[in-house]
Image (cartoon, rainbow, N blue to C red; front, top):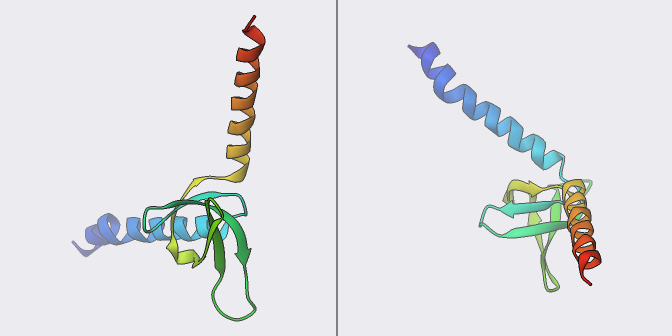
Length: 102
């Protein structure tokens, strides 16, 4: 009974926590994240002090930047490479539409 409880409840929670911690460690400038408050922001800068906790500067647009702890990141929405690829695809599609116009 205890083994079943461990395998069904505790183990999946530990795996999810490890996955989230790895995502936080892999954050880079330019990544789009969702905060625990539900806001979407882009990572502008990552500050790693010699002592203390790692801070990130989140850019919310319109010159609004907030300094926060990495624990305020709920999930990674899109990484820099993916958003750059999406921007390139959108730009190519726009150019193709403009080229078709007489």
